[in-house]
Length: 344
Image (cartoon, one colour):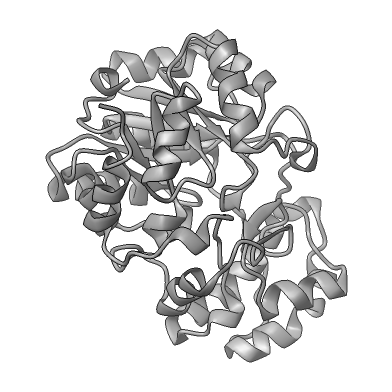
């Protein structure tokens, strides 16, 4: 796996979407791992600019991540968002922003995002929420781009393996952020890392990267004992000063215990694991959660304002169940801790 991806350490930074940063991605890559940058919601021009900035920040391989369309997404013309905006009115007020007008599109078309990534030629493209088709894989490989797929079940891993991805992330239910299931409802695909990884290893030919609940050397050692050839780590790196998480978000991770995260659809309309706050509690209590990505756009308006003001009660506090093990605030220190768990 390390040869295929061009890395020294089989340690992958989890892609964070809106919480990715050039600094953290570069720090992990420079340290010998595979830094990753999430491109959710990015328009093609921004994708090209981001990859160019990453290339100028590190000479080592890095990955960028795209969300594939799952088929259940809605467009602005498909849903009346006014009732959902009205229900979230107190949150807009708390953030000090007016209730927004729906945009022409909630997210850029996937095809345009993919074209921009392939044109910019990052070292690795990772995808979630689906299986890249043969044409996409061929286009990536022609440009020297390795492709990593992501699975939450053995069936999803087999589907990815069948098309020839270069590696598969087997992500357990402990992981922070979105549950990226695509063959079944995420709520029906909550397999823990300890059970998922060895079953995926037994089912596929591609190298398997374990994710979910891994935050220190003990988690790394366990992942390799289960047959994984690499690990993907999110929350422990999100806790560091190099991430784009707010100070309040990092503090919430630092203070979290094993039972302080939960799964919710409140912030995006899709199931995701994080630390509940005012926004999550009030949206869940209202019962007014728009379908994805309408809900993600809606909350994104007050989340952006809250991020700027430092209000941790109105942002997405994504974190995994191993948040209580995320004790370091420097990416280099996290990488060193994880490296200590590698075999040999």
